[in-house]
Amino acid sequence: PESKLPALGTTIFTQMSALAQQHQAINLSQGFPDFSGPDYLQQRLAYHVAQGANQYAPMTGAAPLRSAIGEKTAAQYGWQPDADKEITVTAGATEALFAAIAALVRPGDEVICFDPSYDSYAPAIELAGGVVKRVALQPPLFSVDWAAFRALLSVRTRLVILNTPHNPSATVWRQSDFEHLWQAIANQEIYVLSDEVYEHICFAPEGHASVLRHSELRQRAIAVSSFGKTYHMTGWKVGYCIAPDAISAEIRKVHQYLTFSVNTPAQLAIADMLRHAPEHWQELPEFYRARRDFLVNALSASRFEVLPCEGTYFLLADYSAISDLDDVTFCRWLTEHAGVAAIPLSVFCADPFPHKLIRLCFAKQESTLQAAAERLCRL
Ligand code: PMP
Ligand code: GLN
Image (cartoon, rainbow, N blue to C red; front, side, top):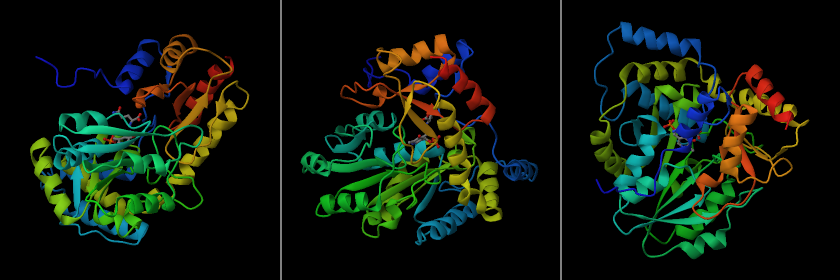
């Protein structure tokens, strides 16, 4: 068939994990932990399976999970969404992002993204007939140039997609960024899709600046999160989105025919976990800070220059002192010859991104990070 996405290949995460496996390299590329989530969560999954919770969940999500998400949101951001009308459980954040884009973007609509941007946004926009407009973020700070942002706005702008803490740059937005965004779009009917899957992996002193803390913006916003990140269970594929009633209703129209609903026992187990152990997500910054610091220390003897990491479980490293190769070629070389797989940054950018930066995932056991760092220090 004639491709609807002719320029698109297989995602870099699949490519690099396959290459890592082929060369038995330590895989710091695709972002996933090499340890499992809490025992209690695993036990509750087995419990609900044994209890017979094995048929379709309600389309919008299991009621105990939606209400637990509502309470957690209130505890975290000081505002409680309506569990029946404003919270929808999805098959990972990926489905929430796709459903939101499909529900809101019409042919010819413009969507503003910040490059480097997570790779699932643009294909969803294109499938909906939308046009991607990109604001380039520059290392090392990757901060938004709000004048450049305003210059991209037009009467066709329909949606802005942001991600904080930001994959892949590991930088975070401040509350002032959300205020800039609001000032820029207040007078137009523009929606905001805020990808906050790393909301609990934020090391900034002021904490995670969620769109949900902004009382005006959140009336136009869809906030997306993922239990894959929060509970170290990326393979469970349970996420959710929070949006005002009218926006949620449109997203649910897509969700009901994309997946209909999300696997039942995992939803019930996560609901139990949220209620039983709220300290788990409260302690997550410290948990990942220790891993980040471990990798930063271990790389201090290397020729990589590590960039500041304020959030996510990714660390950027500049390899200018080691190689002149472009980042995609360098990551392949690194996997094949140094035995460590990483992700190049340029794949997240539409415009040339000539920087020599790779992304390393530190959601790993110390022994894994130690072994990878030893290999990287030899270069
Ligand atoms: N957005 C970002 C920025 C991500 O990094 C990821 C996954 N790593 C997702 C969305 C998708 O999350 P999920 O695995 O829950 O679908
Ligand atoms: N989001 C993960 C990452 O950034 C990968 C998810 C995936 O493989 N689709 O590495």
